Length: 112
Image (cartoon, rainbow, N blue to C red; front, side, top):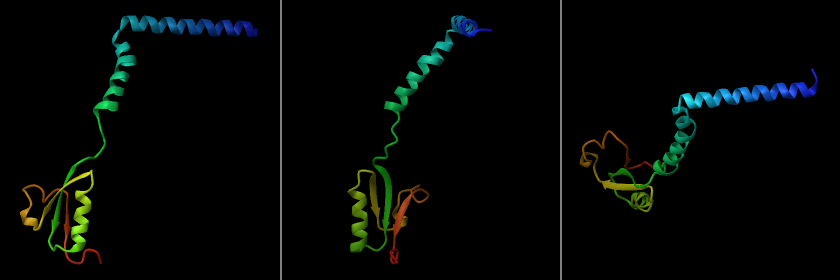
């Protein structure tokens, strides 16, 4: 078979494939939604609707022995845009449910 004949055979196969796909889309219009509408919706959802930026994460700080070090340590949380800290001086003073979640406890000798 010549090079010209192979090119014609490829064109015929491509034309047949395109015809088959067009007929399939006409039979099942939901495939248009899957191919074009769904990706656009996902782009909008992940682009604008879902934010993975952690801002104002609530955290409880338990300071059992207030010192200059603990004041500096807790101040860093208060000046951060990422945390919304609440300081407590005793773990028993934590609101219900916080004791089982995330909290930072500062007691004597933690820096050694």
